[in-house]
Image (tube, rainbow, N blue to C red; front, side, top):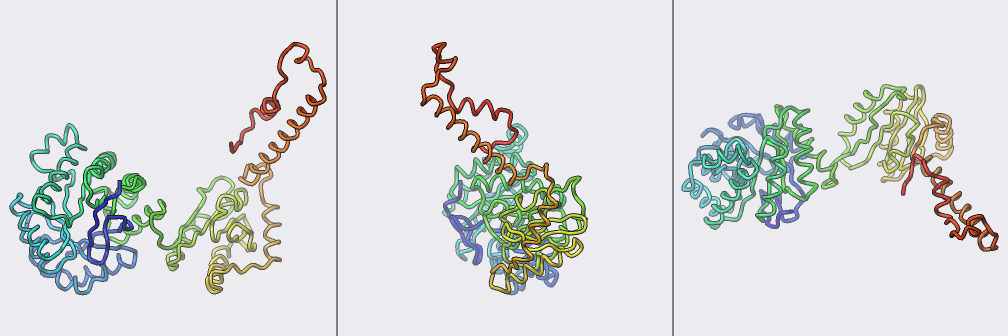
Length: 439
C-alpha cells in the first residue's frame, strides 16, 4: 500500500501521494568536487530528482559544502560505519543523510545523529540491506530472509519513534528479487513512512536492468514505493536514471520524453530495422514531449499494432509509409524513412501540435499499404472484419429460424415432442472452431 507520511528532500516531496522520485548515486570520489558536480549535472539532465554521494572520509564531508552550493538537485549524503561523518554531513547542509542503524555504531550513536537531524529539520533515510543485517538477525536470515529483513526494518522504525523522530524514509533492499518484493509488501502494510525501493547490487546494465524492472515494477504496480534507485555496475550513473524512467513510463506512473514502440521483427522483415530503431531512439532523446513513436517491420501489421501512436513508420524492401495518429500520412523510399519521419514530427510541433496532412499523399500511402499487405495475415483489422461478418451471419440465421417457427411449420423435432433448437445453438454449431474470437 502507498505510504501516508510525506517528507521533503530539499524541494522534492517523498511519499504521501507524491510522484515516485528517481534517485541515483554518483560514481566519483566525492572529494573530487569538479568530477562529482559534472556527474550530478549529467544525471539531472537525464531526469534524476535526487542524487546520493558517498561520504566515507573527512575530505568527502568537507567537499559537500561546495557541492551543495552548486548542485541543481537535492543531495543525499551516504554514510556507513562512522556516525561522526553523518554529523558533519548534516552540518554541511545535506538535504538528507542515509544511515544504516545496523552498522553505524549502536542506538546511542543513532540517537546523536537523530538529535542533530531533528534540530536542523533534515530528513534521514534509514534501513537495511540483506548484506548488512544486525548480528542478532543473521541466523534468521538463513531460515527466513524475508522475515529477517522486515524485522530489521521494523526495529529501525521503532527506534526512530522512541527518539520521537518521524522525518525519515525507510529502505529495505536485497539482491534477491523475490525477497525484495515480499519484504517490501509486508513492510508497507506495517508502517506509514515513505519507502525507498531498489534491488541492491543488481548487476550489469543488462541483467541489472531486468532484475530491477521485475522487482521494482512489481512493487510499483502494487502501489508500493515512493522513490527508486536502479543499482547497476556502471560508471555512467545516468544509465541508472534512464532505466528508472523506463520503468515508471511503462507503468504510466510518470511521463518524461518520448515512448518508442517497436515490433520484435520476424521473417517478413525486408529492411534494416535494427539500425532504424537505434537511430530513431537516439534522435528522440532531443525531444522532451511524451510523444509516442511506433516502428513496425512490415506492412502485415500495418497501423493496427500501434494505432494509438502519434507517429510511426512501417516499411518494405524499397518503400515505406509514415503514419500519424492511426492514419497513413505518406509513402517514402525506405532509405529515407527516418529522415522523413522526423521532418513530419518537426512540422507537427511547428504547427502547434497540429497534424499536417496532404490528402493526395495520404491516398497514395493507403494504396501502397493495400498492395503490400499479406492477404492471408490475420491483422487486428481483419480479425474485426471477420467477426463482424460472423455476427451478421448469426443474426441472419436467427431471423430465419425465428420466422420459420413463427409460421408454425412442423419439424421432425416437433413431431418427436422435443423443443425446437435455439437460434443461438444453431449459430454456435456453425461457427464452432473459429480461431479468433473477441468474446
